[in-house]
Length: 217
Image (cartoon, rainbow, N blue to C red; front, side):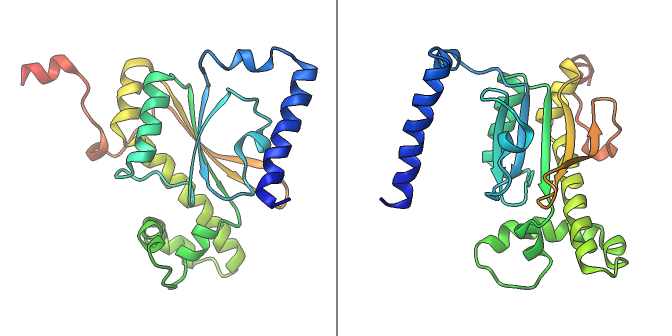
């Protein structure tokens, strides 16, 4: 049996075991979804969102990419974000990075990796923004870990700078934004930052959603 066939067999086994325990298990999901959280995480196979948080099906709306990036020209991520915020009405958006991230590690080198160079460029920009702090760290492993953290923090800021989040903040005060980091060695998650609608952004990134003010101009 090929490796992929084992996945199909495991699926059938899971369905049978699940129905044996709860014959109506799948009925609860067929009518739609109402997740409370949007998870923006790394595509790394060692960081499965539901498994490391103990979340049940239907609780997390998940988007994953290399090094958990929030890029303002990434229409895939923006579409997921808009749907999660405006349609699903999630209350929390979580950006979760992880120590040992290959994307972050390679962004700190000068390797030519082909197409992915374009994606890692955004992480290199994060390094440039925090270069003074990072270059002052002499231990390479600690520097790498701190780079994972500042990358996550910058992605949360990128979220707050989107019109999708700011419009929702103006209308409802939600969602709350979170920056988390997952440790592969311990399995534990630490919260680095929590940001809500009362946070102050750099003025140049703040959009005006006051309709009456716009009409008076």
